[in-house]
Length: 393
Image (cartoon, rainbow, N blue to C red; front, side):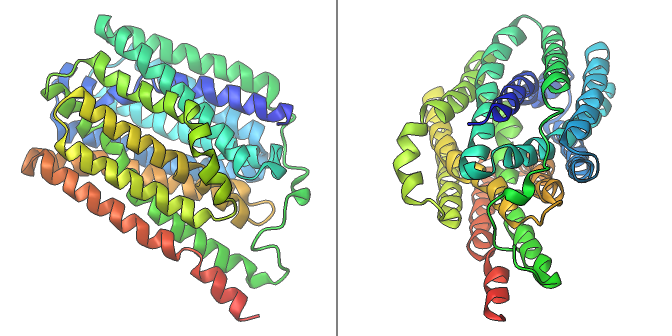
């Protein structure tokens, strides 16, 4: 693995450790500490994600125009400002406004991180994006494990630690990311759109939009874990520490479970669609388990199944976007696919909150199972525009 990749991995680890101190507990804080309904909590998370959609698109644009280093520095600087304000003022409605700003600023960072991973290790293929994915989830393992303990004493400390981690990430990016560029993008492996006709960009872009729609449906469901499911576990009597353990299981299993999935990944090397569909189906099964969960053991079982599904589908998505992207448009394509995921996180909490408060938790789970079933359809069909383009030559 190139040295540049290690800098990206460390930066993503620190960034996600800081972010995961807060995001799994947002709904709990708004609902239990600020006294707002699940619908209001869902609205706040929806605004956060809506701003993230815009931030992802802006981040992709900035990557293509200014380069990854400048795009990330702009994003992390805005993030520090928003988290700093959140640390000082976290009552209502200030919490919602600064959480929204945080969604926008943090959204700027992620497309550049994935686009830079593809540029820093072009021959790595899935491994490059899987490395960043692993770093994200080590952060998710460490952050919530500590956050549950810290929150049991005071939520005030969460905001301070969150800010500290983003400041550390700022200095990592400032000192190491300047030389990670895309000047060698011409040496990247030729993808499905490397032919030389002007029309070449249309079919890959349509394919990107189709696979992005699948991600939107997946994240509508996945986002329930940090929204309605988190509050539901509290209603069942689980403590904050026990709920945080679920995310620790998620993060640790993603790292420690790599040898378990390696034989299947090798067998499906180059078969992105198969990995994508298999992963989504496992997430679907995990929600069926959630529908029957009444204790920590059942929720932990659902989280284990969810995590294995995530390990298959998530690294494949930025890899597909990187393969489809024309030269000089990597940031834009990563921004599109990240925006689709963020749009799912925007819709999910509000939809889930409305369903739970109006019809109950069981119906919400049923709707999420339906969303995941819908996600399989575009996953099966996303390469049709590419096949049609090949058939016309």
